Image 1 (spheres, rainbow, N blue to C red):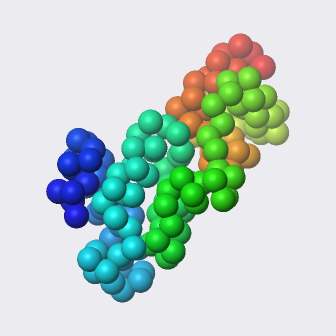
Image 2: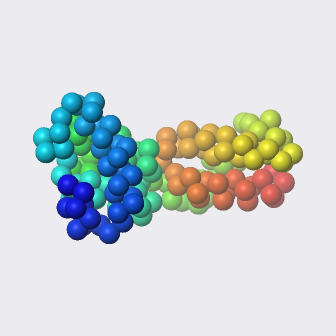
Length: 151
């Protein structure tokens, strides 16, 4: 299975991480061997590739993978059916970042006083508000921009 994935996508570490965490978790929950799985190497690679290209978040991908194991559904079909998309509009994310900043003045004060963990909390709030449909790195950069502009 791993070798078949590697033929499709040449990122062994990424494939290995997914296989050792999410794939094994799903196999264990269903109490099946990989050979009994409804997920093909090609389908797993398609999912991992979408995460790698930042088309979907890792969190969303994990949910899709669970459904793939349960139903044998294809990645893009599940995404279309669930209406999943990644928010890539900087303008839209800026608005959400500002809202998270306004709703969490204590975290803003903590961050501005040097507490780095407060930034992670704010990133988490934005991710929660977007239901995991934003790129965390983009969110971090937008929050830093907003926080440094004195808002």
